[in-house]
Image (tube, rainbow, N blue to C red; front, side, top):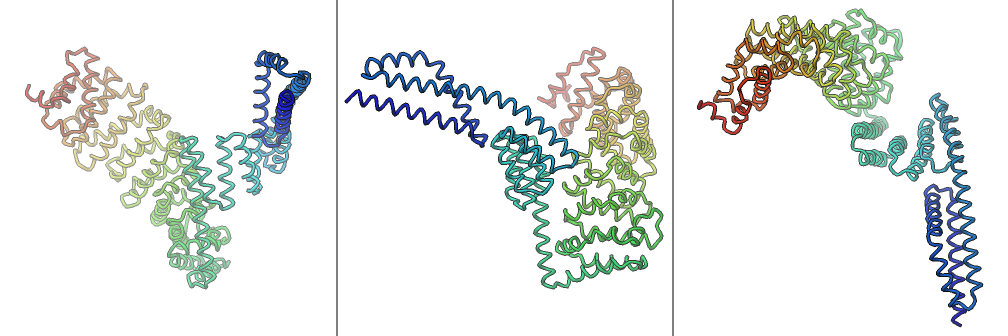
Length: 620
């Protein structure tokens, strides 16, 4: 009885092993990449265990022959088990060879699909990617590439499915989440789309800019749909506002009318746009097609030399666009991407007609005052040209100069603005030097802000290198310092303050031009150390702290100007504590440069001592 029971147990164990091996074979044949990968890993583990445990299994078999009364059955079971493992091992090796061959074919098909995608033949691209997946079911790139092609042909559900398969192959695939977010957005699944983009940010926090762009796109699209639904409800209810906008737009489409007719209609339309619903009704009734569909309006707007009537029509259009774009990102996008408007905005700014310039600046301000609007400007406009055009408003003495500088300041805050404005030498630098040289004749408040913008652009190494190597720029900066020293009027204070900051930034570079002007820069700054404006004194020290270590000629000029006595005087001032920490750091840098050059007996710990006991030097 005992022998029969043990024989039965051995037989059951054998059957369980057969079942396990059968399950492994099914897993290897599975179309699910995750199941297949798990089966391959389990197979490799079993083969490894079989090889390393043969000695132990041999001992077990010997022990069993002592206990079992029918050892032949156990031996047969073990032999059958080894036979299955041998078949499995052979199958695994064949599969490895086959996988390598299929991987080569799948890569070739992927490249063919990519080539078709680049040519815009998305149907062929999908076919090639599909053929590649038939060769290799767990190749993530084929799923994401096919998803991208599905997006192009508006097969959004299929795109989502491919992204899900890609994530089974690689759960950290950022491209899959990005494309899935796009597909969900197209399907109006706004919550799911945001979740995809949040996953990207979680996996790689460095992609915050991409995350913001994508989420803003989702928010804008969701808002657009809500607005359009509200507008449809308004129109169905027979609202007078909805009927009025629709009727006015229809009247504006009448061909062959006098320019004054269209100007009057545009003004009535502007008055009818009172809120977001009216803005949406304007858009959904093809309001932005006025320029495209009406030749008379388009000709009046686009002509270079405008008559009085054409000026009035252009100003009326600018008023209308301000009304329909205020706070409405979808309308802003449609207007800025309109070919005629996109091309004409720089022309309108340069027109020389004050009314047109004023309203064009007001329209652009709607974009520059918010992050999404700035990004649209950066994406769709030639910013180097805009920089030059807006800088020219420094010559104006009215509100246009302030508006232009507000826009420039806002755009400079956009990270993508600086890299696009690195080519300064073509027109911007000559204009900038001319404005500095003509400081007495221009709007000095606007000039100070313009200098600040140029100083901000110096954060870009390429722009800084161009400016620091421009002799005209250095001469113009020194000329403005001389203007201030000669006039000594408050009108120049802000300009001088900005120029000193610009020079500090430019002195981060080291070149031949700086060496040529170093002594002059040093001499001018020495003259400024006695100024009544503490801010100017601090910045003059800042310029000295950077020019002295760079040039022995600058040190000689500073010494001739009495730098030693002036530094000691600063250190003994009772109100030194009230000044910013920047002045103390600049003083320390100046003392260090002088001590290093002349090997003076001064100890920099005098200044360090001041930090501990600011009244110590006052008592000496």
